[in-house]
Amino acid sequence: MDFLGKISEILRHPSRFFHRLNEGSILPAFYYFLPLFLGYVACQYAQRYDSLSGMMSFSVISGFFVISYLLGIGFFFLGVGILHLWIKIWGGKGNYAKTFQISAYAETPTYLIYTLIFIGYLIGYLTGEFGLFYRYLGYTLMFIGAVYSLILLMIGTAHMHKISRAKTILMYAIPFTLILAWVLTFYF
Image (cartoon, rainbow, N blue to C red; front, top):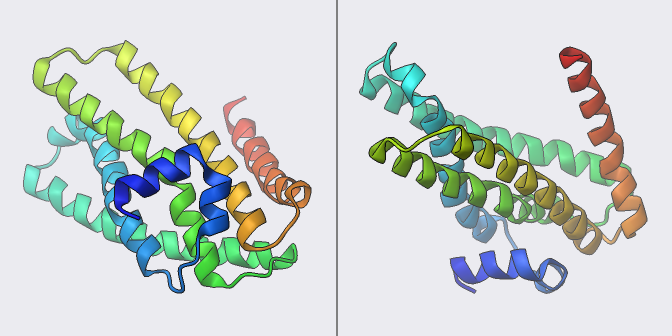
């Protein structure tokens, strides 16, 4: 299946996609992840470019962009390792490669939305039509993408690690609730 076909299948038929997923290694998922993650990092820098450009030259910002991209890939592997341990604690049957595949494919909505937002920021920056509406629309889309990525993570975990859906929901609800409570304590 080609890149766009995978995106379509993941977004439209996630259960079928994860049920049919039979990749022996992490490489196909890794190669799928790289361009989507690039769009994500680009969006992060596009949002901050105006504030950074007053302090640093374009070449320094570009260097930080490349370093952020490479470090982000490393942290993704680390995060997958932590997730894999969590899944094993809950009785997951799959190996690290399966957890990596779930994680890479489940991030599709988040990274795709960030890529689209980056394109919107770029168009807004070039045309001078960048306003609060686009910023708040971007934040709303980011939230929707994150929630859908979490749902895909649950679907993929249930299929690939042979864990019941109820147990999978509980498995992700516990850390989500703890993190949300921790974050809210700093804002309120």
